[in-house]
Length: 277
Image (cartoon, rainbow, N blue to C red; front, side):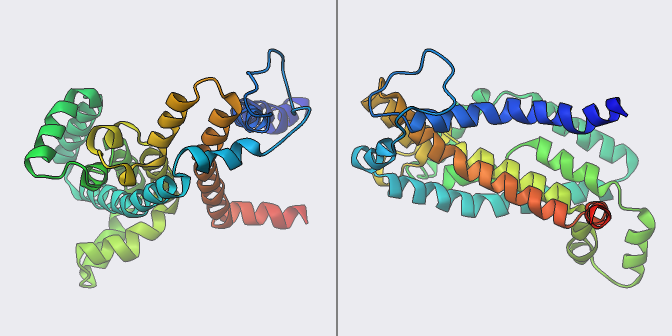
């Protein structure tokens, strides 16, 4: 009984605290008076909390412009990432055994290639096409599903769909795109949520691509804004923490929203909630 209680409540609470603690201390640091150094001891809440750091951010960098640019990139890139990953993963599901194993092996090989190895080549390609200082290089990873891992996640999820369902749909005259949209996708909602959250986190926090390809200040995204804050005020701890909070908050909110949607669609969770009542 005690072991079950520990495994159900104590251990998850410990892991949750490990992940939440950095976010909490980042928030606490942003509420300290302007110019304050990092605390030397553990500080759960500042003695004189203030939001002065948040009000100073728009005075130093065009906060609204950078956030709007990041939101535009995310709004275009996340749906494209999900679409490409889902279609590619479903295509792997339809391959025969040998062809599927070869395709999966190829994806694993691509997954092992470091991103830094293709930076110079990608920059030269985009320069030749005149795409430098546009959002096209920032959206290009989405056209490749960002990472082979997201494709593999969809391929594994689609693998749980029985062949009998696919064959029955084909006998009814449905095309593969119709089967993908109306039969396969509704059965892999958890995978779609996971891919969407991972894609959002990647595109929202992407720092290298904007740094490499963007030269006009009015096109900069918020990760570059954080870098400018560090260059302008490297010793203003509350200001840097406020910028980090603004950069982190959307990812946390998206994760919580995805979790809420996933639990709402989980029949076991619904049964457990009824049982608790």
